[in-house]
Length: 80
Image (cartoon, rainbow, N blue to C red; front, side, top):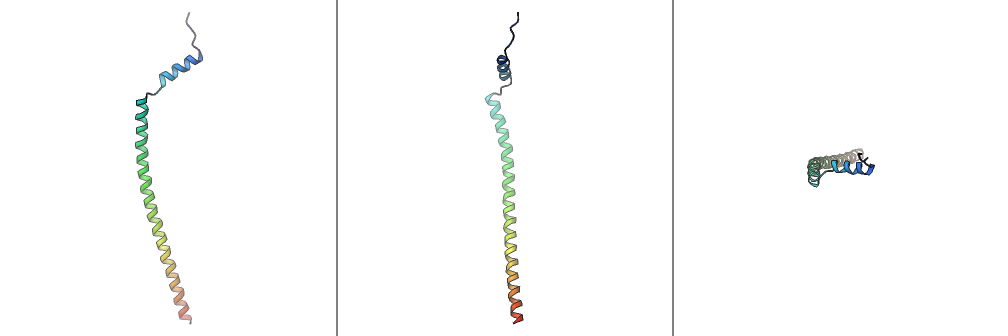
């Protein structure tokens, strides 16, 4: 007569058969880290570019405001 497996036995066999070894796990984590490093590099590059653009916009806005003030002052002096 064959013994019937209990649910716990079946579960433990499933876990044993599908368990990842430490080496396999480390290899998978290494691959994920490589992908993340690539994405991090790209994000850092984009952040630098955005900072440059933001600085350029601020500088342009400052120059525009300065010009507006100068024009306003010139208009005032002409009226006087």
